[in-house]
Amino acid sequence: MEDRSLAEDRLQATVHGRVQGVSFRYYTRRRATELGLTGTVRNARDGTVEVVAEGQRAVLEELLAFLRVGPRAAVVTRVDVRWVAPTNTFDRFEVCY
Image (cartoon, rainbow, N blue to C red; front, side):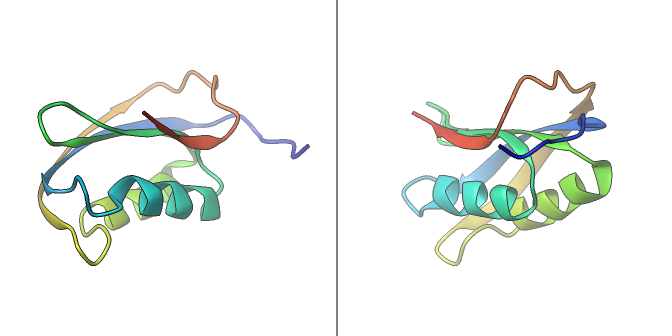
């Protein structure tokens, strides 16, 4: 099992636009995993996608850059961002249903 260092920051993002039904969660999980981040991504009832990710700030900024564009079929109109203290409770990045 991989030994992960403690996260230095936590990104909480709500992605608005045409972001459901376009594989947004799949590509977000894939990108976050490539970056070595932990956390979750899920569809919200209001049509947005909610992302919680923990890791190093510079790496989280890379994920945020992806969220602002999304996968090819997505149309992102806005991303609401909050930076908070990490909980270090995640052991991987996963899609929540």
